[in-house]
Image 1 (cartoon, helix red, strand yellow):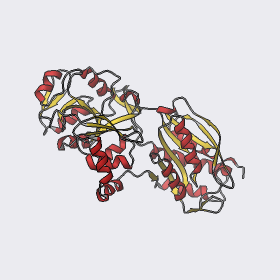
Image 2 (cartoon, helix red, strand yellow):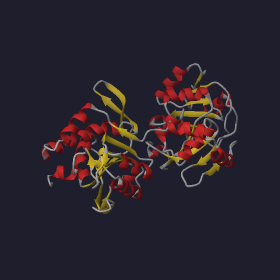
Image 3 (cartoon, rainbow, N blue to C red):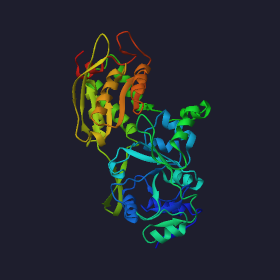
Length: 421
């Protein structure tokens, strides 16, 4: 039997959600049916309850912009739209981030909205982002009151939260993945209204919103990284010790780089009984920029031994300092993988930006750049060319000298790794 709960029974609601169950609840539009966004068991349960085909993806609800940044890539236009119309009856189609393809019918996009309902947003803050669809059987009408949901889904879902949805109206759906905004479904908010408000919006509110955007540069502050990097910088450190410290720093950085990789649940049996464990939901591909990037591969593979390795060969013109490609090869799993581009030095940013271009043209989407040492010039270049790529550094150094070397830096990383200086 389906439990009938009140909104003040939030602990029981969260308990059911954490137990892989689908729960129906009133929203600011129609009555919704929701599960945790990374819960494979609950996902299958919700599809079965609705009788929904696998080819039709579910939309996501998030509590706020911070949660939005965990599941989708955003830019200034998206942030302005969200600042002006969210929370509310507006759904944005965005490029997904950290969501396995099976949850999105193999699409690289996800439909996301922030509901204009205090109870739902509070639940989302506690449960995390949730896939939320209308609480009704497929091919049946949407529901507004909990009794209508019970008539359609009693015995098919774990619980229904009593209440009444704000209206039968569905949200407006806007595709934000192209150069121009595109209306996929008209609701109470029109595309013309969105465009007009974005163009005429005063700077104060959107500027405030943009300043709160997720930081894409991560300088990892760790005592052991600082300790080992000091040995690498030292001119008296030999090739063997240089390589060993680079391996160890790469492994330490990998813990931070992978901390939000998506997981899927995996039922296992321990010596004491059955339990639900977790495994990486997607493959990982490491892409070293040849040749110096090879020096960081082993350290990362110590943490992720199943990671596949692609290669991009670039050389830098000694006069213009611009990169030229001579080799590129990737695993077939690249388009759906979590991709870690690695190069010890982020100097002008030309090689890193060019490598990311090559990876994207090969189908790569979820990309992070990991460098040992970088300077502002290189950071600015990558962020300008690839604002969707997170940059991870062990240290941010002072400047580039007249021949494009980082100061204080650690010299020519390739020469010091391979003993060719």
